[in-house]
Length: 126
Image (cartoon, rainbow, N blue to C red; front, side, top):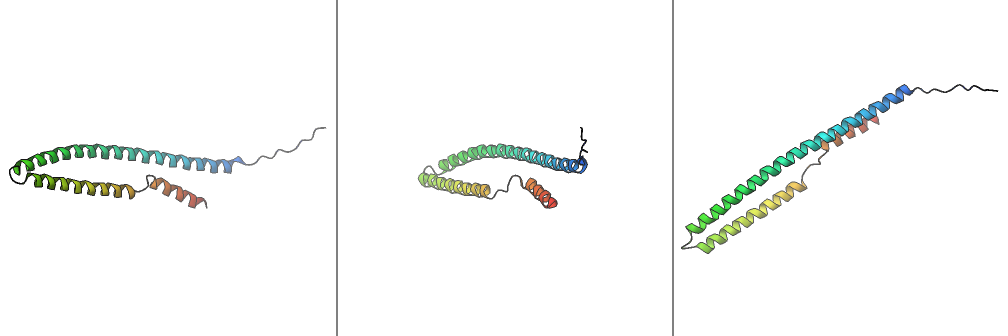
């Protein structure tokens, strides 16, 4: 005795389309993350290169300036001149350090655009 049960065929069409759309959205967001990472890497390399070049040139200029001031005041106020230059350099170094710290603490999140898109997607599906 064979009993033939009718097989229930659920319609895979709508579910498949929803899953396909969800994966397409997810793929787009991953591509956006990759693009943002690449842009951030290129920006960081450029900033590091320019920063190193500026530091090297500034050091050479400061050494030259220090030597010139020391030579100029050698007979009269050499110790005061060298002390003043040292104090000036120290104050500028402290100001630069505080500014760098402030920039690091106030930096925006790296994936702001991607997170905004994920929030839009979440709000759309609610």
